[in-house]
Length: 161
Image (cartoon, rainbow, N blue to C red; front, side, top):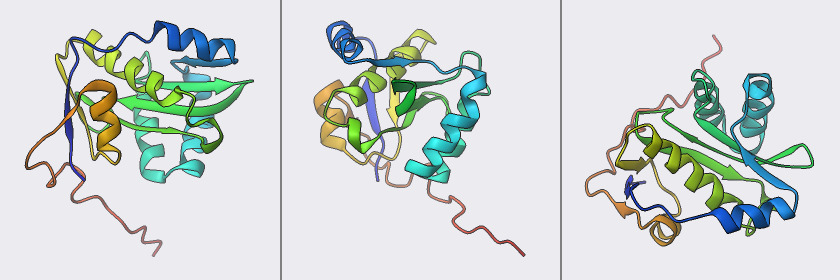
């Protein structure tokens, strides 16, 4: 998996899409400390423990360097930035039942806009799966030679001995 570079100066306007989601009862916002364990657990159950660890790190900042999407008080998605490395976007995920509604796009743009607000001109989308999606939504470009990424030597075993 490669990393992608995205220019943050001209992110898409998501005002109308955010209003449309809100009219369907979907809210995208920053979570607060009392929600940490709920979000970390949800990400671990629905995606991976690696991603749950990154969400945990997001709560070490105030405000948290993540966003949550919710409907009727239930988590339906999340996005993080500045968790594995400064200037990095990710991880991000949306529950299967909430996909294809634009939730992922809002989570992406809000996190990238927060990177921009913190002084970054470019952001890195780390270890990209859906490269075509990021190219389409934010004109991200593959970083040549990034196959050898920050994730190369992740611990993969949990030795209980």
